[in-house]
Image 1 (tube, rainbow, N blue to C red):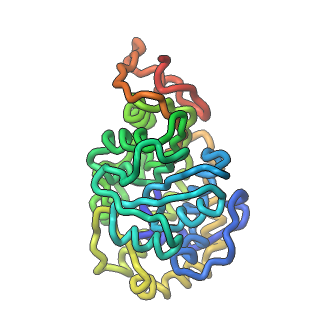
Image 2: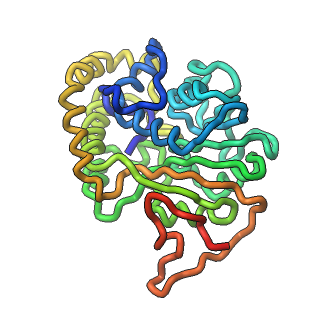
Length: 314
């Protein structure tokens, strides 16, 4: 599970991990981290695969991974704006992308109705106490027939890694989470009043997440004085300088970690620790009841797969 640039994720890179977006050689410390992170590269590739063409469109990214996802999305074309809930995150994004970066207050987006063709939510919903109201805001700022792409932590019942993370001090509080994530059914329920979820899938399985957990722990030990905020522990250039030795060590060892991460492919039959999806805006925000099957599941939950239809049949 990716908890933002406040952790070091994976300090390694393999060119095959990202085929769609190939940024120019980064010099900023944010992008140095991004280039060495399998998890962030995979996240970007998943977002791009669901985003569709954006040339000539007006787009918004929310919580752009401390700026690195925002920076990459703007290279795809279109006119992008960015927004985040932390002043430190906003400063970081602005440093990378320059203009059109705003601070959001609570769940409220600082934009007019019907402004955007596309809204991309990047690891933000789990940070917001009023996640339903925020989804209402996304519906409001989207144009009719606009589309929404969302990425959230995926809750896996009986998974082994969450208890281990808590034992290591990598708690939800440290990462600024008000909830650990979402199941597929919870996402459908959250979206159903204003959006039709067209596709949802998971990625990042056990081996990638286990390695990420180890590196998060090493990063937390190297930066003990860091204070957690609403977006978790966000590092700045000075913090990165303190962890420069750790970064260089993991950069040197990246072939080993990359090889270990390939074992994730053997777990193709399991669910991942990250959930990503695409939804189409309904013309009206209208609370809807979800029909239940005889076993208590919703139709949306029963239909979950690599591709699905709407969240409800009407």
